[in-house]
Image (cartoon, rainbow, N blue to C red; front, side, top):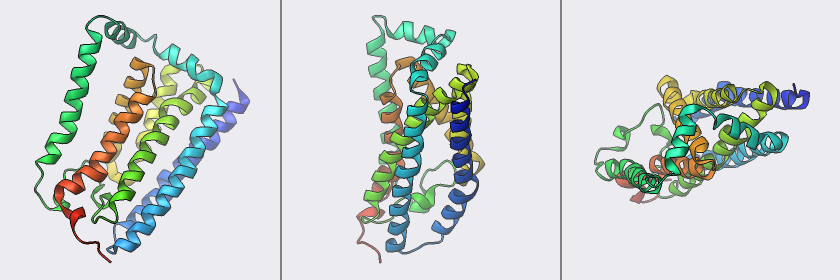
Length: 248
């Protein structure tokens, strides 16, 4: 067992659990009570900075700390029979057409339902307690976009790339590595309530599958960013609230 990797893993998991159990829930509870755009912008700005520093820092630490294990963990996980079969299929003649068709269907599933939305903001489609997060004015919209990109990039680098490799360095078990990172990803969304945790865990599992099947971390990053942009930008625009004059 790699003692240095174990120590780093303990620090990373401790920080993430602390964020999930204390700061995230407490901050979000306060944020939901805010009505002023200026006050909401200040919190958005702080969350963005903290997200870059915390998740970005943890991503960098895990990637550097387990750098040599990243390709080893990926290769071990790709030996699982369903993953290996999917990779073999995609490498065949039908692979590219299937990928294109799936990409089109995913984009349509993300965009079309939102375009048809006409309900008030508090009736926006949401899984978990996330409605208060949605930008309500034009002044909040850029923060929604920035938070979406930041979360998509750093969460994928941490939970799909660095953290599984770090767990793998400690356990030598690829299944435990990716499963543990996915469960921790779900727990990080504790502030969204039980339904939000379940939905985030399922999404995390999908991101893992995309990473393992394609072998590229860019694929889950792009999908993660698009899903978050749908919630934080496209839905508010479709509801028409962000086109209103800026609130004070």
